[in-house]
Image (tube, rainbow, N blue to C red; front, side):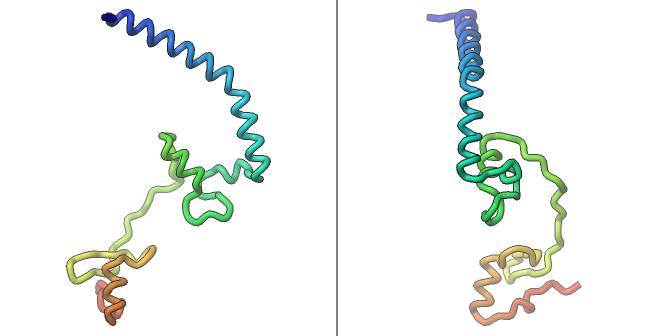
Length: 120
């Protein structure tokens, strides 16, 4: 059975191996990425969050990068918006974005959206 010192030595050796492999393959990987960017017409602007061409909402690249554990810096803080509509069961909606399911269902039943507006 291995003791702690043996395991730490193995970890150190493996980390050195990983570092060597990374440095060996770095240039090749960069060249592969540049070739694909050229083939698809991708620019550095396309890789920035919210800048993807022909994409709705978030760029797939930004989502993938964010999902990979990278920190994405927000440009401004999200402001909390007061609710403008309240449903019969206490649900609220700010009026921004898509209508919530509860409001869409009530409108489909013949209700008016104005019936659920919160009066100041």
